[in-house]
Image (cartoon, rainbow, N blue to C red; front, side, top):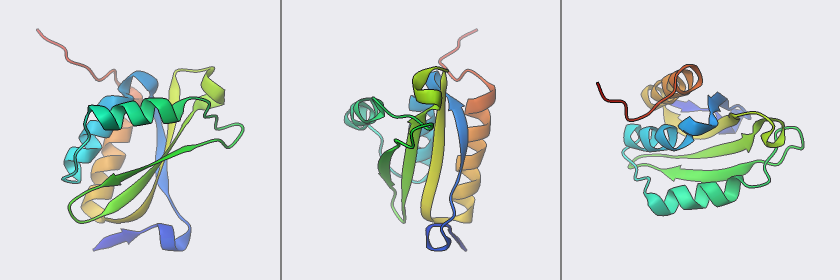
Length: 118
């Protein structure tokens, strides 16, 4: 079963801490059997410059998996005045992938994701 969001003009999303953006994107890619490499990260970093949810300036980035492609729309909250990145996801994706991505958004908005060691 696929979640057909784009055809109905729907999207899912939320917000994450800016410092969690790369781990979010890398984890979303793994969940879709996609690749997210250093070149992808550089493209996102460059594309995020000048984004603003207040001014409706979003950066759209396609994430291509083995079976589906989704569009990530990213913008800095209040034009970068906060440490928040807003995330919108559209496209036709499997329900299990949608659930994984929404779980990632939840985690990346509540916690600082990093390479912690005991």
